[in-house]
Image (cartoon, rainbow over all chains, first blue to last red):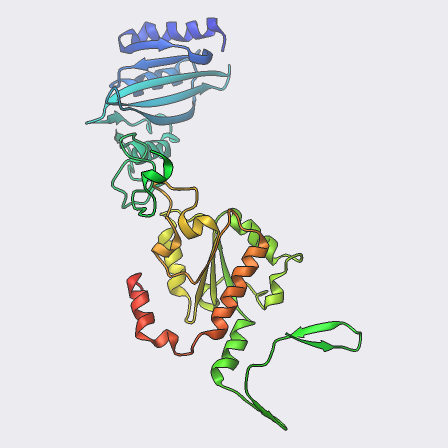
Length: 166
Length: 188
């Protein structure tokens, strides 16, 4: 995606949703726009329907935990298959109350991706038709990809820190 | 092993006969020894292969290593007919109940061979999603170390299982100790 094409995308989004944009950057030439969370679905719908944007393929969607900010980001990657443009959108949610609107109304593929994000980060997607764990055991009580939880299994008794020099 | 010369000059290994009293036209020994001999040389394994140890098992079953030499060429893909549960590979916590159900469906007498570091201890996967050793949910008879173990090691594990099978008392599975051991795993 050329710089001029990125500017075009930014201009079109700014025209209609200028108030929603919090931050724009392009790390590794990958246009990344941080938005306010409330109208994110509307923005994605706009990018889907717009005759020049045509971001009609959801590459992926996932969570990121920022413990120092006390926030969880939800990241969406969209793809325009006609021009081969890619765009990344981010919203930030407070960790105490990580509620985001569901994208399943725009992309059916968001269903499992949002379940995965719920499973690992505990993000509640409002309006999701079947928001339950998808990969981990149903009895799990933590959201394991949040950095507040240790990676290692906590039930091991044969390992202690002195074995690992820490 | 007794070596018997055949007309073509090849040697064939037969199982050694158990201790007993022999005479013209009869041979007397204990039932336990005969049953042990028969069971030992006709183990039907159930392969529960979830990752790379399963690939080593395929080599073990192949012509080069040939587990059939030990009377185990007949794999049982139904737990109800299997004698030996061979767990080969990483068991995720979500797979745990499945493995347990397979074990519960096996008829007594049943043995369990845990192949590889993952099945035995979780291996390198010391993480929230992986069961840290199958002996947390089912009893294990023999552990085979390795990541993955070579086919020779798997065969060594099978030979150790054969030894257990051969020497096991016929009453062991009825003993209160055995029942208590199963109860520890929550299996009645």
